[in-house]
Amino acid sequence: MRLPTPLRLPLCRYNPGHSTGTNPRSPHKTHKSRKTRQPHSPHKAHKTHIALTTISAAADLLADLTPALRMRKRRRLPKKMNAGILGAEIATWWALSPSLLLHPWWATAANLTFAQGVGHLIGTTISWISQRSGLHPPEVSRAKVHGVLGLITLSSAALYLRRGQEQAALLGTRARGVRPAATGVAVGTAGYAAMLLAGELTQRGTQGAEAVLRAALPPRLSYAGALLTVGTAWMLLWDRLFFHRLIRGLSRRAEILNRAIPPFAHRPSEPQRSGSSQSLEPWGYLGAQGRINVSSGPRAADIRAVTGNTHATEPIRVFIGLVPGRSLEQAAQAAVAELERTGAFSREVIVITHPSGTGWLPDYSLDAVEFLTGGNCATVAMQYTYLPSAVSYYQDRSTALISARLLVRAVVKRAARSPRPPRIFLSGESLGAYGMAGVFDSLAELRRHVDGALFSGPPRSTPLTAWLRRQRQVGSPERLSLLNDGRHLRVCAHPGHLSYDHSGQPYRQSWQHPRVVVAQHASDPIVWWEPSLFYRRPDWLREPGSRGVRAPAAHHSDVVRRMRWVPLITGWQVGVDMLTCTRAPGNHGHNYHSEFAAYWAGILGVEASRELLHRCAQWTRRNGKRRV
Image (cartoon, rainbow, N blue to C red):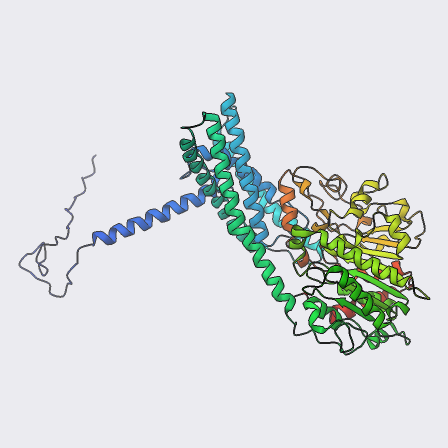
């Protein structure tokens, strides 16, 4: 039995030329209430079509570039990029692997951009070599392989969030969450797209240059010349339009900040401080960080209140600023003159401290010395540049060494002439540690001339710490190098390391004066980054605390144990960590805070209870001046 064929009624189409008030079915009947339809504008329809096409193309490109999603199929990007995109996908897994510190969104983006770019280059190179060699990959289901790769990427993202929570717990802070991670992935993917565009422009530029050079050179030479020409052009573009502008901008900003008077920095009234009305070093000479230094810190009344020492005296703080036209030798002599004016050479202790590039000094360190000595001390520092440490280190790291040597030798020479010479100690953090640790050629020479030293967060290239890594005892890890069973020098990631070594056992040798402490956190990228990290695995990434091997509790490690070394990637990740290390919580990253009190108590040989050390640090936490 057949069903009846449905009746197909003719469609009523609007005829623009038809009478506006006439019903097509009943031409004699009009409807005045119905409005007249206007014909569609071809121009508007064309614009709509272009917009929809653009949106569709953008969506396809986004799908082609988004990690995991790009493994399904290629929509817009050419097939010649398949190998590169495959390499970028694999590199994404390592970009999401843990490094020393938590990653804000922009650090995640930077890691993803770099890793995907490197992965794309490696994948493309392997594909090119395979094609030239006549090698062909085994026949497998591309859809299955790509599906597995996409799942691995999603798993890596989930692990990234989970490890972030573990890392946050080690650092004593909150995890970043999903939103910053998603933002980082989105921006990092956009950066990867920009790198692909730059690569395409490079390829086309090379082809154009090769076509020009081919008229005068053999094919191979013409291609090499074209590649060299385009590469040089990119380097000049990067150098002139970005890098030098960035350095100049940072330098100008640093100069302006150095001239500024922070609103919380007030001219001291105590004659024991530089910049006061009695000082030989005028307030206007000190620079921003110098003004902060002499205006802050505990006074005698504060020392009495915190320590209970009724005999506390007013501590001396000398700071010599960076003055145009004054040489480093003259600045060192000005420091000695200011120390003489304040009576510093009759004090029990003089601490020669070396600032970082901007002139910044760690207040937790200076305050601790003043509390532990009852104010019977003097601290002296000399500014040698106003540039940030990274810029100063890049442009001229020798100035940090020269200025430290001049100041130390001038003070030590003058102190030796005193009837009762004070004990001399050295200190420095970051670039300041690099300069101060390089004053003497060896640890033995340091012990002959001064009574102790504290170097916190020394850069990897610091000569003393490099020598220490080479000379460390067999069995001691690089992060906690052991020398002569801790007889004079002790490497500390935690105040507990003043008493016990990496194994948790007491040092075999008693701690003899002069005492030296090298403070370095496992999570401090300033301490661990070096150029060779891009291509060589360091010892600290072979030892427990990495590669999934848990570090002993005695290490006090604050780094995720699953951190591994990956060529190129790890060097980049730790380099990015250097940009965030001063934002880490106190006593982690490149922030050395309350631990200074314990370190100085050990170096000075002062018996101090844990409660007293805590009160000293609490005072600095409440009253310390922030950086500018």
